[in-house]
Length: 304
Image 1 (cartoon, rainbow, N blue to C red):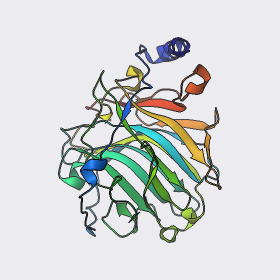
Image 2 (image 1 turned 180 degrees about the vertical axis):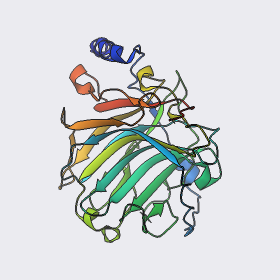
Image 3 (image 1 turned 90 degrees about the horizontal axis):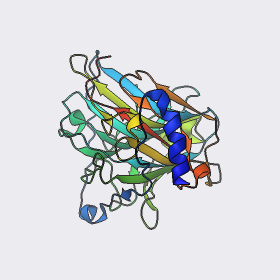
Image 4 (image 1 turned 45 degrees about the horizontal axis):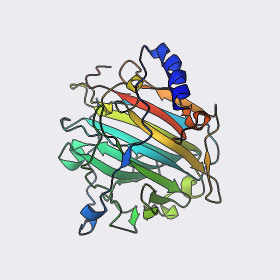
């Protein structure tokens, strides 16, 4: 069955001018339980300064058809970018949002963000806003909002030291955001609750989401060039070379997970010559266990 999927993807990706590499379904998860057991984290009510007026942002992501949703789960590939400049950032994430009125947004994932952390390491992060970022919300603990439950599982702001290598070992962490809004780490033997965003933070998102998205985004000042997204290689490089998001699922109002529906998700890339996506693949059709998946990303140097 793996051979059939390989043949299928080979034909599919010819349109991108790419060639098929090994589809990676055996990546190892990242574990930092031992590292985090003695950590202390302090609330920093010091929101970072707004982005410069000339700040440029680009995206490559999939989004579910607008509807009524109660969360999502995804396996997120981990990649580092140790040489980002101060105003550059590179993010792999999933969003849970409600756009009925002012944008209510929850976000969790991994990013390299020198201006936020004063380093160019990969960090786990959370984010929220109840008004599109105008006057509410923040990353991690830069304001009151996200409430921790288990400090030993994964903490917003944590450095992720074990990252994937090009054509080498792959690492991931599986996250889920569930109704009311609970954030879990699910690549452990037993899923662990990290923390939650209280419903009282939100207006429209207090009950359900209208939009769910998964993918990458980057930002940089106009005087700079774009940073890498994902692994720093185009999506068409595929397994062990391009970044992936796999085993994508949604949650219903009873907290039960369900797979995506073919044709009910849509792609968005605003500068495909810089950062791109593969088609969304249902790997279960080919005897694999990666669920719905896609690859995404692109190299540094974008000038769009």
